[in-house]
Image 1: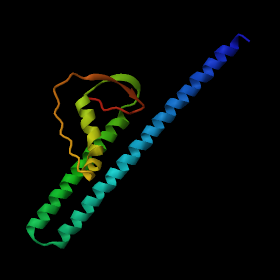
Image 2: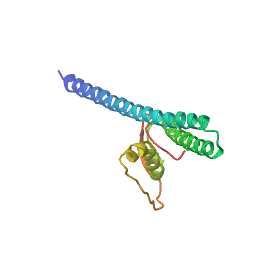
Image 3: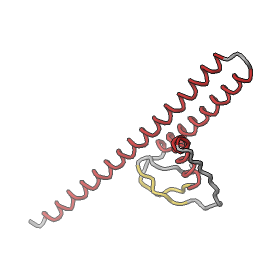
Image 4: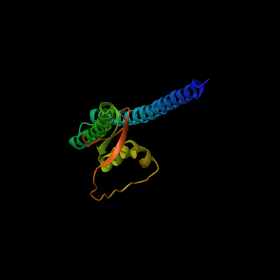
Length: 144
């Protein structure tokens, strides 16, 4: 009977670990959903401006189309680099994190949604030291 409290404590620890894992998976699902939605928006922009550029033979229209395609591809690159950065960082430790980069990376994913409602975000950051942020199963934006 003396092992019963220890057994219950172990079960609680296991359930808490399962809950943490479920929360991580839910966060990953949210990230994948948001990223996929944003990539769809980017691809739509690229496809539409590519069609426009092919339809219009004048140099000004083609230059405008190529500029829009280049901007959309740059946005896709930022999103991809953010996701890849999270995938590379695995562990359960506190790491030095540039909070400005974290905010900017988050805003890249929210930018299109904000534009839809004509919301413009203006940021102004003061230099700040790195913060030690808990990195859990790949979810962080570190300076490394």
